Length: 135
Length: 379
Image: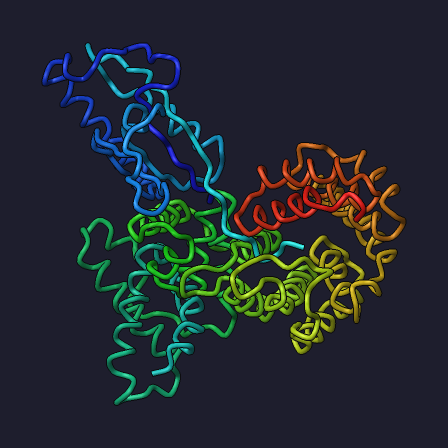
């Protein structure tokens, strides 16, 4: 009964073991990878632990208020999440240990040669609901 | 059509079917069918004995469904002519089943709300902020898990109480008030079983619930106990909680819920925060430490010692507590501030905010840190 965001990283973390871009895989390898992701999702669903999934398009724009009549800043010397984040899952599990287990499973998605890509996944807890008792 | 009556009857009807040997999941389906039938036919043709009516219809549905299964399975089912509805309360067995130790906490909570509480899957999903499909899976897995459980052995009341307390503590979101639901289910449990800790838990829930309106502002900000408007406490609930607690304590079988309720009662009893009987509260925390030896209890005890004997004594008590316990930094910040070490207190409030388990608490702790960081040098 704790929610976690499972963030799929492209970069910003040590390189995964099977670090070959998807466009260099065979079509069958891509299909196997996609099927694995769907199956992982189905398992989390069947376990009653699935909350949400988001696959993000590789576009992004930075916007910020810069004063009256000024244009927003649309790029900058920032690391952009489009370079870092491919998508995310939200899970609702009984324990941190279980969240680690699910993330570990997901990181074993097959890549080139059908070998696990050992992809880094960032696990971030949600703030919980305020409890009834807090004094 | 009285929906409240149907919800009251649901668990005992389900209990009867399971007691007669029906598989839990199949029994639940049959009871749902009977409820739909009741909603349809009762307005024009109200039964004299609603529970008997529901049991008869649900049992018939169950047999129909079973008969449509394979002949091999049909032989295993009991004879068609059911025994009369017993006067014993099968609800209690159902509580034990739904809180069975083979279930994970979240499964036990979901199944209890569904089978004992009669809530819809959608309502439970909303309350826990997960998709309805996820909650449906959680409940059906839980049903499968307990399907193999024999129904004739008494369960552990303590397990049931922990599940109900989990429901109560989940806070409130969605259109189902889980705290109120936990109180309703604990009241029903209390009618079915005579156990001082059931009384203790009900008293504890009532005493906490009584202060709910004063605990947050209209925008959801947290109001600490000392700053709460005591006029907004529900005195009727407090009186009921205290009375139930006093009855439980006379049985001389103290448990952790009774001890916690006693502490809640001492808070509720104080006309002002300053008049709180912290000395007695420390004594109850000593009892609780003896009963549970929980680090959370030791942390709360340090707060009480700080109020009873001053911040130095509180810090000494805190030194005995595992520093990795949630809210440790928040407690130390409070004690440091009261001892006059405002710089350390501000740093600890910020540290506590970063570790807060929910947003209202984080915001409250950030305000505390900001207040100390922005104090005037002469203030």
